[in-house]
Length: 266
Image (spheres, helix red, strand yellow):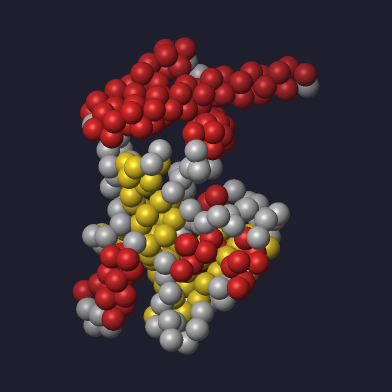
């Protein structure tokens, strides 16, 4: 980043794999970060080239899983204050201004005692911003002091864990899927990770959960969380969420059976 835009002692950290479509938008949304770290896991497109052209320090390391990869990216940061964004995310102009104002007032202020800050996250899918069905505000703790916070949780839905957390008002913007095909692929991947998490925690497959959990997820997202207000995209998202839950419990059964077969063979 050029000196004129390196205004605050914050490291923007991003993990990437074949993100040439998104990486520039993400980096350019934080022009005031004094340091930009991109931890790449083997991109075959122009992700690394674009990131380097924008002044990022790019590292290439094997994939560890979401939580551990993001923790490693934070370790590579030059500053203790870290802003962790996914490549398909960007700060909105309003959130960028809010964070700049925050760091202009950190010394001696009440905010200086915070360990981290949560943003609401607003996602764009099927040609509209999705504001219901559990997709918004979707609070994300992405700005944190790495000495007082750390990445936690399991294989999927990783999150930063901190004690003293404040909330910001303006959103992170998110473009999670290029199309429905990518959404289906993502649901497939995340349901596998979710099934593995259940198995690791000792959860057992139960037929009634395979039947009832997807139904309850649809009711939760489409009715209770008002996904219907997002029109047809809201209905499609709720059906997709229910199917992802169905896959998670079906895959838990598959994992259990595989473990039983291996135990019998010994």
